[in-house]
Length: 141
Image 1 (cartoon, rainbow, N blue to C red):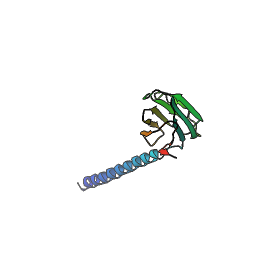
Image 2: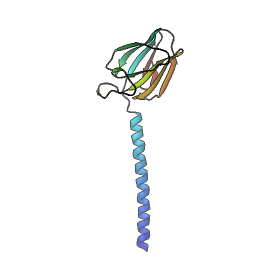
Image 3: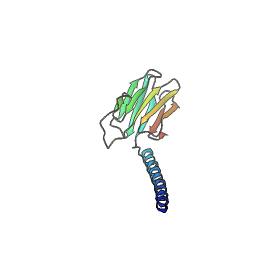
């Protein structure tokens, strides 16, 4: 009888230890994922007819510009304009791996981050030819 009691105690202790080890590994994985963003830097300009963007870091493209109808999003990744449901399968370790949409509104710009950004949504007002720089963490200079 004493043997069964010792076994139950040992099993309980072992179960608790395994639970905490599993929990600590999950927390470590979440922490690593949240800080695993590659650097990119993009300058955005709202024009009368659309949007101009200049990649300062982390992209294969240098300049993008497109005519935009208000409230119609355009997907952008490290290779340029794309579709949100067709992310690029090509990966280059020298480039940031990101995907977001940009939408011109009457008030300014709305960005939605899908991949490689700490932000899920950014919005800011821009008048004609004003500039705003963004990176993987949000708005910057």
